[in-house]
Amino acid sequence: MCLAVPHRIIALRAANRALALAGAVETEIRTDLVPGLKEGDLVLVHAGFAIERLLPEEGEELERLWEEVRELAGPQTR
Amino acid sequence: MQVRRPDDRRERIRVLSEALMGLADRPVKVMEVCGTHTVSIFRQGLRALLPPTVELVSGPGCPVCVTSQGEIDAAVALARLKETTVATYGDMIRVPGSGTTLEEERSRGADVRVVTSADQALSMARSDRNRNVVFVAVGFETTAPATAAIVIDAWREGLDNFMVLNLHKSVPPALEALASDPEVKLDALLLPGHVSVITGMEPYRFLPEKYGIACAVAGFDAEDIMLALVEVIKQVREQKPRVASLYGRAVRPLGNAEARNAMERVLTLKDASWRGLGVIPSSGYSLREEFSRFDALDRLGITVSSTPPPKGCMCGDVLKGLIDPPSCGLFGAYCTPAHPVGPCMVSTEGSCAAFYRFLRGRRTDWEH
Image (cartoon, rainbow over all chains, first blue to last red; front, top):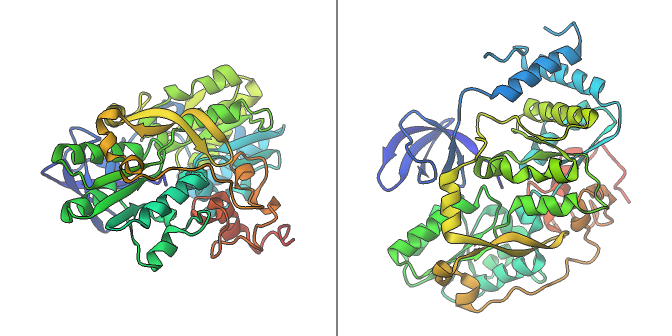
């Protein structure tokens, strides 16, 4: 139910709508829950509504955790 | 800062599995709250990569599964009304009520339509103003903002033939109910990624602070989930429970304020009945007074009764992580995805359906 799929905004349309692309599928989505979207933005879409912008970076906590995982997994880790 | 991790995905999974094997030197009970996590764990075969000390249980994170029997009956009763269309997300149509399902009502002539977006339900109401269109609004905080947005639209447009059967529920109060249940005894929680997109991290702080439960907000790939397991097991070992954020590409610490504003404007919290968990205070959403004319139950005179679940069905215990699905006497013999008895076998996100789909043929302990 809470599945959300990344979409790329292709074109903004009137009335809080945009054309968005996921894989080869173009869909019209609602944009009112994420203000200020632009063409080219990558968003998470749930039940026909963009619910958040996706950022390229993963966040500091995840980066630090990977360091620890590499140590835990031992010296043969590449 | 660049993440330093192996380039090859298989190598990443191997490294994570090895790290988990090294870490998990004591029994840890971890609940994944989100149905999408449940399916991902099964589909990717993650259970086979975990050390035997890690016990993974599924929680009440499938909205269809926690919908009470009385609420399903109310949806069926609405579908039986004349000049009424019931629009719903797909999983709901096969859930058995006390008598029939929405799907069976449709086969008898009721106008039940599956939508993938709340917006489609509103379009149906616009295109035929002489029919009532009832949107069955089911889901957690991920889904509730979309319902709020279309109710605001209907209000602006004066679409009085549009109504909502509001079954939305809130995740944090259900987690509090589980955390405080002496039977459940959780060490750690994988928090739902897309609910957290809306709520942010703040509503979960009580879990480590009041109940000492280790928490991580996790994404949905195999490595997202394995990393989250490393994190929570580390927290358990160090006895430093907190809410870790491991899905930073989607979840902002304060969540999506715009979406919460829409919810705040339209919805208000009330006590709600959850299958398996009973009535939990302030855990469901109802329409605010200003929008009450869009409440399908009020407008069409349908009441939600407190109906017991089907006889023998143990969905309640499954949703609390007390038993795994094969421990239910109905599982696999009387209750299958083709002929489901309880909602956990209906929804693709239900843990009974996941066990049936992915482990059938590999385990024989449910062949009673």
